[in-house]
Image 1 (cartoon, rainbow, N blue to C red):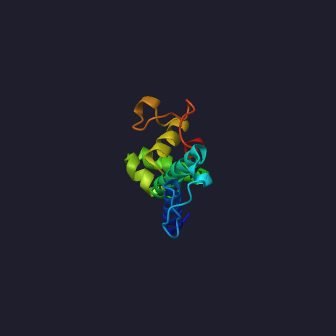
Image 2 (image 1 turned 90 degrees about the vertical axis):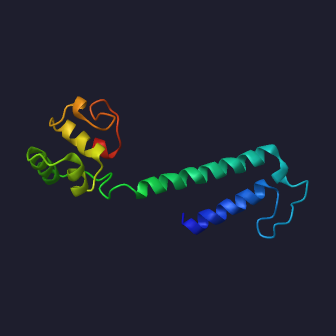
Image 3 (image 1 turned 180 degrees about the horizontal axis):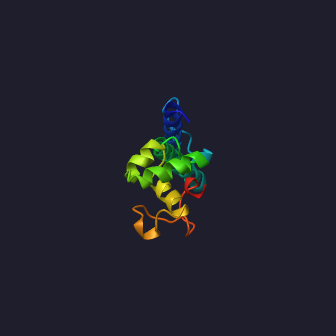
Length: 135
């Protein structure tokens, strides 16, 4: 959903919740279905859902491009070599367009990092983590 669609949708929902016509701003008739408690609750739920979807999209937009992509054998070999040379994990994460958590999960899976050495929460071996961690 584009920012303008989101903004307009929120304006329409807020107007309906307040009992006014979204286009004219005039008060809706007292006998409108919008005055029913269950309808107002449904509209409030829709507002919450739009906020949640938008917040998720904003968080997702801030993640590196490599999130969710499969690890290739070549990329794993590069990772192994970089860690062997002592390249810091945040630098490796940036180079591979992945999160620090994904790098640590992959290193743990490869046996190059113990769970107690991680700086991020969750463990590949314990079943926690993102979809990216499990690939």
